[in-house]
Image 1 (cartoon, rainbow, N blue to C red):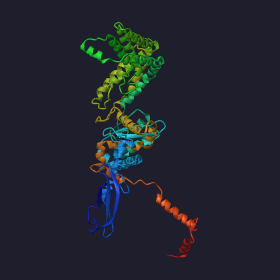
Image 2: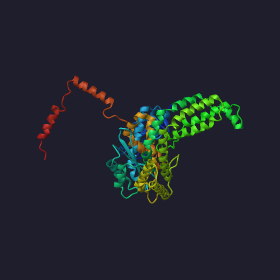
Image 3: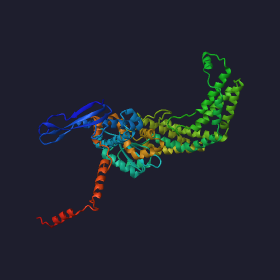
Image 4: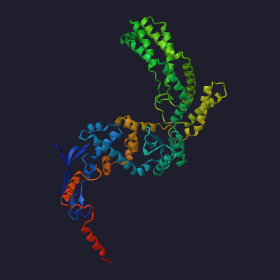
Length: 559
């Protein structure tokens, strides 16, 4: 039995003339709510006995929009689940457990996302007042041939301020976006961006009075690619041509697995299975080669996988040679010799060795400037910099040392690399350390990249890789703005203590296809058919009666 809830205007008298309200009409409909479940809404509409004004229940209208079955909180919940948590429509439909279809979840969630765009635009003055100052972050995302979505955020609050679809990050496109941001949110106290020329030029043009910082991560990434990319690629090609990884994997599969009983004995200081212990020793060395990654989490050029593989082969060769003098079991010795023969195809190759040595030399210089910027080997790169001056001083010392190298007898590849590092550092130095008096400009644009990764991951999880670019091109702007719903401070400023679904409900309109309803179509077809049968369906909107009235009006002289 579905429960019934009665809704009516809270007063018995008209607020305008104080006349008594009388019952006008009672409406019944099924309502499905996320918080209240399914119920029958009995809406008693009242009427002023004096001037006939109708009064409806504001409580019901805040709960569910007219002509809608699913309440406003279902719309908000569906949009949050789909665009913040990344659930598919089928997952949301099953989770709500109220007979809502996948297609209706899609319609409701899309409507919720569009509504927040309206709410955001209307609350720009409120957001502007709440942000005493802000740090402008700007970046764009795109997939292959699809349009680019450029997003502007505040690095301090994490608010997404503005988003727009355009064809590229050209000066003109970015300038137009920044002009709108300046108009809506005043002048920022600073800006952070990657090193794309169009963005930097537009920032300087629109905000000539603010410090503009370039992302440290982008600077180091571009610098590392210039120094290491070609040589690292060549090393990978040479290693892959020799092709020792598959034979080593095959050899590893033939070696017995780790025996914990033997290891328990070793833990006690003895071993009754010397043969098994020898095989396990060889196995562990091979696993260290095949599992080598050395990734810092930042990707290339901060992680050099091909060089790491070569170095692991060098280390494994030494360990296997040391082990060969003490192994007694024939099978274990056979495993060891086979492994050494395979590995030596890499370590004894003169071209590989020469390339790896040169790559190591250049990487040593790259690591010096990286460490000067206090970029950790692994983990998250913190944007919190307490002392920019000391970092700049360290970078000046490192580049100064490299300038001294240039006047010494160093190999040509190191000379070229050191010269490039010094030149790029001095070219970008001012923007690498630009900051405002409050020192609130972050040193990287990483949270923008994390923001875009979250958007792409959200879409990819729901729709798959193939559709990601197309969907971002179609709804990326709304999706970027909707991420503000995951920011408690934004929600507090925009909605205050109001009920969020009720606010969304004020903008909600019932789903209605353009044109006539099906009943109206069928009724008019019947009317037209009858008129044709009665020979009363003319081929012009004019008839004799209308023409007579027109002539009569024309002949009248009215002064």
